[in-house]
Length: 206
Image (tube, helix red, strand yellow):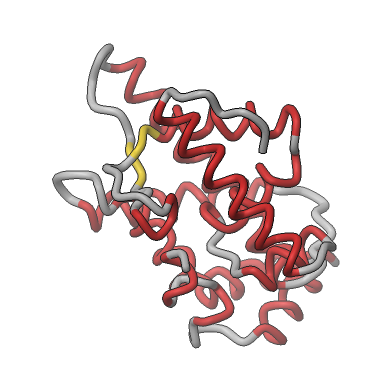
């Protein structure tokens, strides 16, 4: 069971109802900018919880970093044009992609600003990779997911949705239009492959 299965899944938090969020997403799709502005406070708790998870390994002002991450995610959401939102799960699936991009951009900027400086690391504990490990470099994880996507795009997407988006098995299955059993199998195999890849071993097939 992952960290997200222990209370971090968007469907597990009481801050917003699926029906209300879906209605606002539909209004946003129809061009109602005010609907977007009403939506963000409803999902803020979920997004903040995800951001806090990624910033947990960072030193100094973690609260400020978490807030900055959520704010950047919001800016990128606002920049989205003509998105036909299909519902709450679709919204968090898009947030998963955006969160990954934000973290990668932050890591690249930090690397460019200070060559050899501290990497942005995200917690990949024993509940994620089934083996006690320190946090991993987000750029290394991003590169590994791209390599995984090159020969198995669905498994890479499962990891993105579950890890970066906090979706549970059922939500991930709905987002990808596959069965929960398929998601569970992909999640298990992808974790093994990524663990080997990030450790520098022979990843083999996924």
